[in-house]
Each structure stands twice: as C-alpha cells, then as structure tokens.
Image 1 (tube, rainbow over the protein chains, first blue to last red):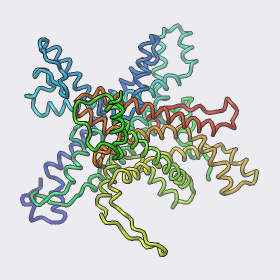
Image 2: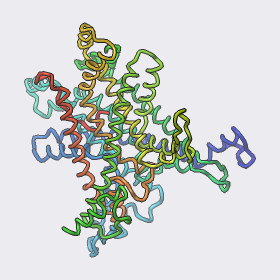
Image 3: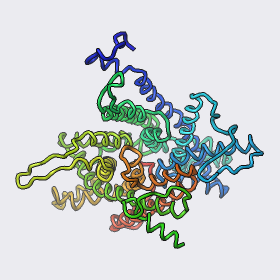
Image 4: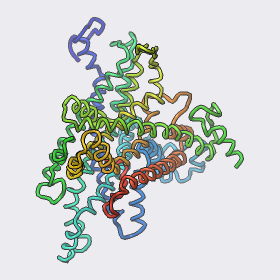
Length: 298
Length: 280
C-alpha cells in the first residue's frame, strides 16, 4: 500500500502497523464490513415485503390462507433463528437443485437421495461447477439474503399484523360509510395509517436484524467474523507480518462496530418516530420517547 | 421398539458424557435422531435455566443502579446495558472465549486472610462455565432494561400512598416498588426468557468447543444434517423440541404472572401476550 512497505521485516512501530493494516487481506476484511451493510440494506426491504404478505395472509377471509399466514409466524417465532438459518440454506439449495434436476434431466433414472448423498445430474448443479468464483459467492450470498428474509419476514408479519389491528376501528367504518370497498379501505385508509403503530416494532426488528448479521459466518459467507478469526489467529515467522494471537482485539473492533451501528440506528429511529408521531393520537406522540423522564425518582 | 429403548439407554445422556462414547456413524434411525437431539436439549435447559436464574438477581441490581440518582451507580449500569444490548450475542461469545483463552492457564491463588482459594481459569474456556457467564451477563442486560422500564412506569400514586403510610427505604422497596415493578415487567420478561432459551443454541457454534462431542440440541441436529445431507429430518425434530420448550416456558411464566396479578380486579389483570423475539 505505502511506499515504505516493500520489506516488512525492517519496519517497526507505527510504520509496521500502517503496513500491517493495509495488506490485501485486511482490505478484504474492510470490504466484508460492506458485505454486512449490503446484507442489511437488501434484507430489510425484502423481509418487509415477506412480512406484509404474511400479515395480509393472516388477515385473509379464506381460511387455509389465514392458517398459512398464522402458522408461518408462529413456527418461525417458536424456534431459534439460528436453526432456521442452518436449515434453510441447505433446504433452499436442495430445493432449487431438485427443481432444476426435474426440468433439465427428465430421463435421469437414479434416485436423488442415495443413502447419505444428494445426487442431481451435473447440468442441474447450482451454480454449475464450471461457473467462476464470483457466481458461487453471489449465489451463497443470495441464499443468505432469502434465509434472513424468511425468518425476519415472520417477525415483520407479526409487527405489521399488530399495526393493522391498531388502526382505530372508526377509521375503517368511516371508509365503509364513504362507500369504499374492502380493498380500497385497506389500501387507502389502513395501510397509510398502520406504519406509525408498527414503527416501534419495526425499529426493534431492525436492531435484532443488525445483531443477527454475524450469523452470516455460519452460512459459509466470508464475513467480518470469518476475517477476524482468520487475521487474528497467531501468525508464525513464515508470514510477512508475524504476530501472536490477536483475535481478542479483532473481536473488540467488531464489538465497537456493532455498538456504533446500533447506537446510530437508535438515534435515527427515535427522530423518525418523533416526526411520524407528530400530531397523531398515539402514546408515542404524547410522550415523544420521553416517557422515562416522567416516572418517579427512586 | 426394544431397539429404540437400547438407543435411548446408549445415547439418552450422551450429551453429558454418560453412555456410548462414539456417535452413530451411518444408517441413522429416526429413534437415534430423537434421542440424541433430545439428549442435547439437556444443555439448552442447563444454560437457559441457570442464566435466567442468576441473571434475574443481577438484572434487579442493575435496574436499581440505573434508576439511582448517584452518577457513579447509574453510569456503569447504563454502560453495561448499552454494551450488552447493543452488540450481538454471537460476537460476545467469541470475544469472551478469546479473552478466557488468553488468561493464564494455571489459575491464581487468592489469599483471603482466613483461607486461600485457587481460582481455576481453565474452566472458563469450557462451555459449561464460560458460555454460562456470557449468557448471564447478556440476559442481565436485557432484563435490566425491561425492569428499568417497569420501574419508571410504576404509577406515581402507588409511591405516594406508600409514603403516606410511612413506608420508607428498604421496606417501601420490598413491599411496593419491587412487586409492582415485577408485575409490570412480567410480560416482556417472559419474552426475554423465551429468547434466552433460543440463544443457548448459539453456544457451540461460537468458539466454545463441544468437548468430546458433548453438544446441545442444535449441535447434534447439525451433526445429523451434515452426515446425511438431509436437513428435513433433524431440524424439524429440533423445532418440535423447541416449540415444546417454548410452550413450557409460557406455562410456567403464565402461572407466575397470574400470581403476581392475583390481587387485581378481573378486568384489570394484564393478559400475558406472547410475542417471542420481537420485543427485546
């Protein structure tokens, strides 16, 4: 990176550190912070869409659809999220390969599950074994995004369902009195109003989503946890920059990163809530997040 | 049927090191799935129950400290809650594990004057102690925030009534403030307990090694899924176990909730609304 970094053995002190922290692997480490942010920014809207669909299904008049919506939220919430992450990554992968296998190799006679193996024809592999490395990485990342969206979609469905129910009944009755159909009343009256009721829950969900991102490591993505373990492990003199076990410091850096991320989110969400609740007849507007100050002093 | 009983005898307590040493290698039966994953659930129960138990007392102390006027009590409590609630549990596990590994392996001799005790530090790198400490600290922070919120929403009239009756200090706290706080906090605290049990599945995936393949339910479920490359058996079994566990937590906490609210008129009683994972 810098001009003085050509021979690491002769360096000392800050010069050594400046070179050490700008090696190619460290650059990959810094880029993986971007991976986390991309995951957050992609997953949040997708999960919100899943949640909206789930909440609509849970409100449906058609009973099987309603059961599906309620069952989706109930099961995902009753089981540890990490179990879902581990499950969906394999299940989605096998499901996609199974479908491709059925389409691309219709005359394949052998069974797909052979004892402890899952065998599909080579043309159905996803991604193809000849595909370049970035396709494999992108595919893995996409699977992770879908998995996160499924799990957090269930949480979001629950929050949005609550938000829809919190819209005052009189609002919907007024809409009906004006001759709106169910669909019109839903889209024009309920949906615009539900957000302010759902926002505290959604904000909470965003915080949980931030704190779930290190689980990417378990899905086989080269994320910040992967690089922290990789770079922090003790390096012998065979390496250009030998050092003892520094994983503790790398994880401290990750801790600080997450603390900053959650703190900034908290401040932004508080501001947003105060703005949205302005003039609304919700408890958020009445106390404006300063409810705690009104309590007793013990 | 008798084959299954044999399996239960061999693997029922495998997760705590009793029974067959080697895990089954191939041709897994459904019975083996149920037995081993159920055996791993013992660890989840161990971590969850102890963390919630110790965390409850610590959380009470921290919530009181945060509500205190004196800054040297309030600030540390605020920072403790901020650090443990603001960062992922997964990272906390890694961080503490690395810190425990770096501690001197031997242990220290602490001279208490009347007796000398040796603090063994090598146990800290084992999951049963190290991970338990992290879980206790984590749940304390979350519960303390819940209790603090409840403390702040105790009706002013209750406190004034206590003052009018001449209750002060410890007596006022024990008779009025603490029971009311607990009653108000209980629905949210139930969610925290459920989340704690779910969080115990992270232990063996985050640095703490599963010594001699003694792991928790998720550890064995992923063992089966890796060996058979079939996630559709092991994980649903795990999910079933956890739904049962969640339901039992709700039953126990619901009973406590009814007891906490028993003096209130029927319509004023707060129903326990279970929203696991969503409100933390």
